[in-house]
Length: 315
Image (tube, rainbow, N blue to C red; front, top):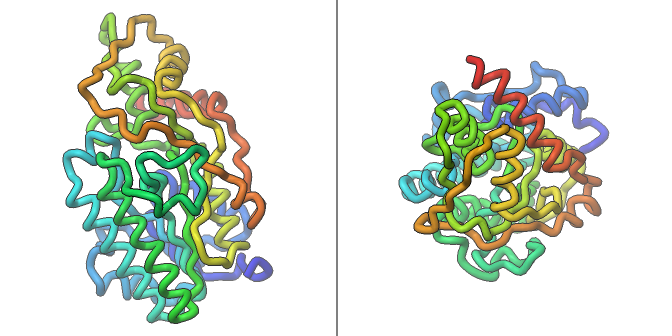
């Protein structure tokens, strides 16, 4: 497929979102004509409805499915049913519609939240079925995990070319800066800037600060997804990550310093920590289609904060 990839007609769900906007940029940068990229908006095509999935895949050679309902720990605790149903029904129906329409390739993008709560570090793809996901984000993780089962079942029964990617926590310019459902990095940037503006002498951080996380810069993630869409044709999940692990406590103080907040950090240990550790084995992506991350966390945080200052803080 790599030889004629740029001539393909591509359906990019979630293409106007945080990750999707960078995948769009990467596709165009690689030579795919913008006229050949279809991006359905949820207000026009609600992919929870079968008829809209059928409409969406019409004429597509490749589907890159990024559309999802997502949020941080608080959002996951508040809306577990919606997170399970919406993500499962969108992916399941879209993949079936794509199969029926004769789409050449379906790129399913899962989530690191699908891994078991106590996965040995670094997370290897074969560990995915070793246990139940961490409880706070299990509904979302299980919904996305179901698409892997569907993908492998469809490949076996129908010969349907479906690949499944597992990106780790993403961040970067254009992230979702909303205190109600932001993930950890934008949530912390918001908290520290708000505290600095209001002259608060302390910021409350969730949990103990002891868990670890791995983060992947959104532009790196987009590049990895497009590389896989172009070059990878096999069954089985593939991790996309940076391989760089950091304690949440260390991350909090990094962002505090970059924002220039001079107050204290107080840990609210009544709040959940989430998964104890999170770090991926990223060797398979390198071996199979040559993907490696390029932006370090320190570099990416600077760019993310600069974007926030220019586009949100000053608006």
